[in-house]
View 1 (cartoon, rainbow, N blue to C red):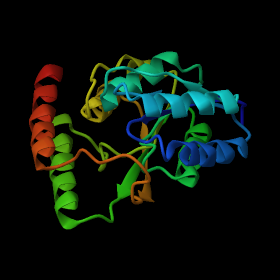
View 2 (tube, rainbow, N blue to C red):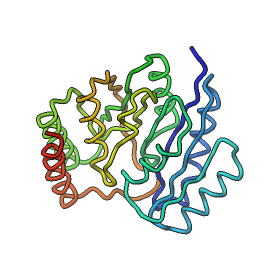
View 3 (cartoon, rainbow, N blue to C red):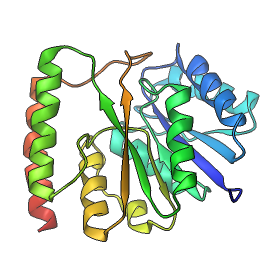
View 4 (cartoon, helix red, strand yellow):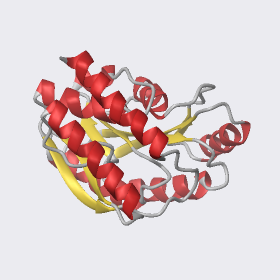
Length: 228
């Protein structure tokens, strides 16, 4: 396996108390790989506690960089991290839900399949209403964008720098993942979807409710209109 640099982007929001444990677990797992790596923390939303915790981690661990953002937004944080990443393989993931084992699994899949996008297909164990809402959203995206993947929002997502259209994502909100999938379909990037079991959150607060879900349903339709 050719030695490559992997950039792992972790958006951080309201996770000051948990981020040290999260990053330590991920960094230790990544260190056991044969691949060089960097971990890019993106504290967003202007919270001083998040920024301070991330800065401390960057000081303590040479592979960690902190890239604070005053403004919030999942997509904005992902794009900020991608813009600063130096890796041959690029990965972004929800730091509140990703285990070190799942992170390494996705990266190794991507390293073993050059030129391929690798993403998680989460097998959600949460309440029925969340599972139904997720199913409806994924069915909508599959229909609008002619997708083959079943979990549009699933992370980790890993892709090679050669899939350069993914470096020009535009969304600042949760719809960045739908945009990601749509671009993969348009550009013909091959994709492997790896099933993992979604775990309970370890830090931060979920912002998903029926109001935000309705915004995403409408947002997916508007995104489709823009890509037509």
